Image (cartoon, rainbow, N blue to C red; front, side, top):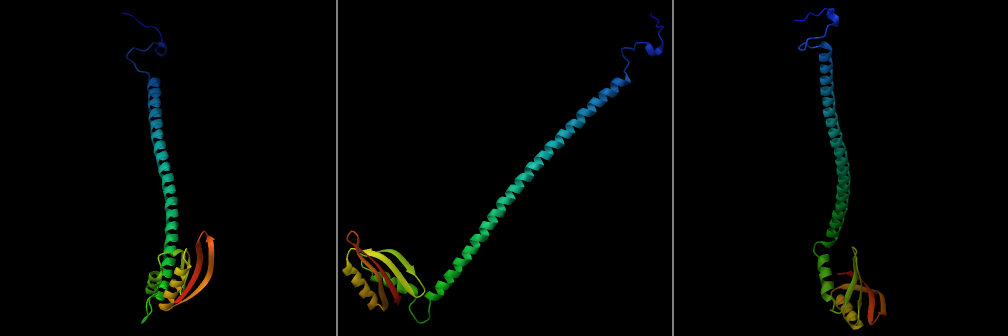
Length: 175
């Protein structure tokens, strides 16, 4: 048997005894690890939400651009519909041939060796730019138009501009 004569404060602890300082430090470390882990978890959640917010902002900007493009297209569509209504009012007149019938008559009167480059339609006239190797065919075309009730005016006639071709511009009125 051993007798320890040292005062109680200086005596070595029993091997099974637990020091309170050790427990406090251990609990502090565990608490620090838990708080750090919780902070990292919340930080990653904040980063994910920021990334999602930035994606939403970018998506909103894209949608705003698309909305603007759609509005522009709708405005263009409305302009085209207005033009279509205007032309339909011109085309359909009660008790007379329609403008489309007049165009059909013009196209049917055209000989095979006349080629068109440009065809402009105004409310009261048709302007045709084209070329032909045979001026006699052009003359026959003008006669056929006159016989169908169209008034014609030759605005331009340039022979031999391109090889053996004659370029022309004809204004057609009535019908």
